[in-house]
Length: 61
Image 1 (cartoon, rainbow, N blue to C red):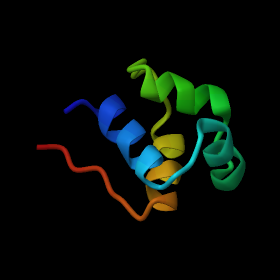
Image 2: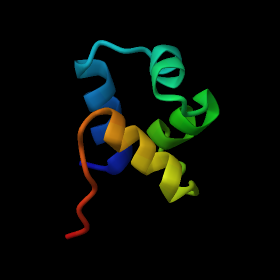
Image 3: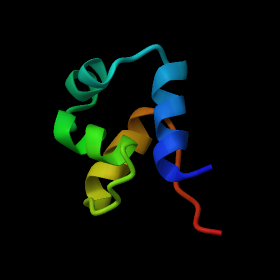
């Protein structure tokens, strides 16, 4: 699975819309939309902020 699909699945499993996630995590809606659409030109600090929100971490294998 891709990062975009994995992230969207995590968000949906948590029962959050993109707007709700943006408000609760403090990460911009545009960033979340771009991430879920596979536009991987993003800032690592924002990705880490979202992963921390969900209690997840990124592993490169």
